[in-house]
Figure 1 (cartoon, helix red, strand yellow):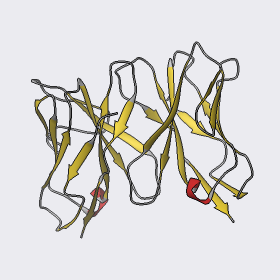
Figure 2 (tube, each protein chain N blue to C red; figure 1 turned 180 degrees about the vertical axis):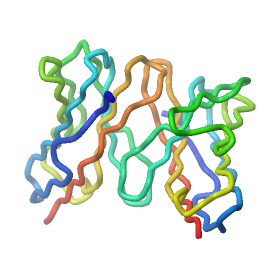
Figure 3 (cartoon, rainbow over the protein chains, first blue to last red; figure 1 turned 90 degrees about the horizontal axis):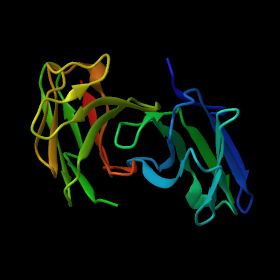
Figure 4 (tube, each protein chain N blue to C red; figure 1 turned 120 degrees about the vertical axis):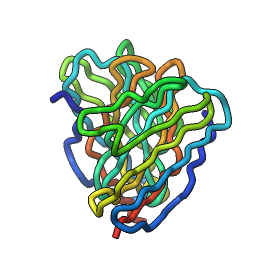
Length: 112
Length: 113
C-alpha cells in the first residue's frame, strides 16, 4: 500500500552539528507534509510543515526540503542540541482535513 | 494551535474489561482523529471522529472493538472494548485545522494484563 517511510531508524550526532533526517513517500498525490517530534512519554509535537507547491520551508533552526521528483522529504536541524533528542516522524496528507499517514520514525540521539 | 487534553493519562487494565478515553480540546474543531501507537512503533489511524454521526474506521478497526463518540466540536471519546494484552498501546487523539495542520494530545498509555 502507499505509505511514508524513513531511510534510517537511528541518527547519532554531536551537539552543535547539523542533523538531517530523511523520509521517502510513495504517493505522488500527497499535497501536504508535516514533521513531528516525539519525546519519550509525550504526544507528537508539530515542528514544521510544507505543501507540495513548495520545495523548501524554514523555521527556527529547522528547514524542510521537499523533492517531488524523487518523492523525498528531509528535515534539517541546525546546531543540534541535546534537547533535540527524540523520535522524528514525517507524515503526509493527501488532502487538507483528512487523516495523516505516518512514516516509521527516526530516533535522533544528540551527545554533548 | 489547539490545547488538547486526554484522560486518563495512563491505566493498567485487566483482560476482558473496557476503558473509555476522553479527549478535550480548548476550541471548536472540525476534524478529530484517534490513533494508536504500539510500543516502539509509528502511529496508525484508528478512525475519524465525526461530529453528529458515526465514526469512519480504517481497515482493521471496527466499531464493536473501538466505539467512538463525538457529541460536540470540542470533545470525543474512544472506548477500547474487551481488552487483551495486544491492545497495550498509546492511544492519541488529534485535531485538524482547516488547512491541514494536525495537533496531538499527550496520549493515553494503556497496559492490559
